[in-house]
Length: 312
Image (cartoon, rainbow, N blue to C red):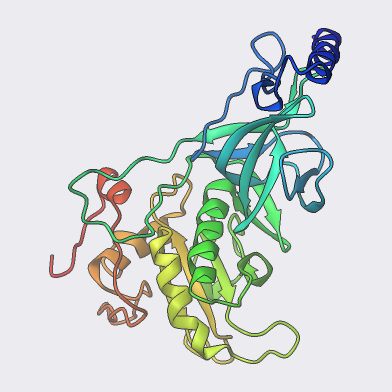
């Protein structure tokens, strides 16, 4: 295929030198097609890296552009734009941890894919009343370790979307670096009363890395971004869980199929988020009001049966 194209290119150059062909008439090289590496992605969908190794991100879709970072194997990304065909590769612009860059879909020469689709993003209904920023997460439960904590890719996708929303408002906390406790951590912290035993739960520090300073002004916008991204999220203040407990945000992913029973109770149980409470069971059985911001209900949550249960 490539030898044929090079012969064609030489012929075009000769014709250009003779004035027979203009530069604007030269066709772009075709993307690899069926039999080479048919693309499996579309703009707007979620994908994960499956190369078996860390892949590069570049500033532009070609091999000559500067490398702007890397994406580890098994991580989650959102496809922002593409495809673009250059240098024998199919390139896609990816949103990784709220950072943009171009990555090839795979190696055409041996037919190996480096990216795999894990779910499309549903378009909001024409009569939707959901707030701007809602985005349905992918239903993918592969596990990954981030900052020493285990999360599933669904939760990580939601966290990255929250990062994007929060950063757009000027937020300075990097969420992947601020995870204090992740999921699948049975018995890890007794005060969590089992909420982290399954998937979908994490604790996020609101203190400056290095100094320990509480970033007070960051708390409100971060809570809102996490709720827009699909989390039931609350601030847990100093000493709130037990004497000496640190300040942090506790977040539980709405609709996660692997939530523990305790975490599911924080979503729509008697002391849960959708009932307007703070998610903490009380010894006297009387739930405490949610003081961490406005409830967010997205269309994808409604489709899964979640609704405003306040007063019910």
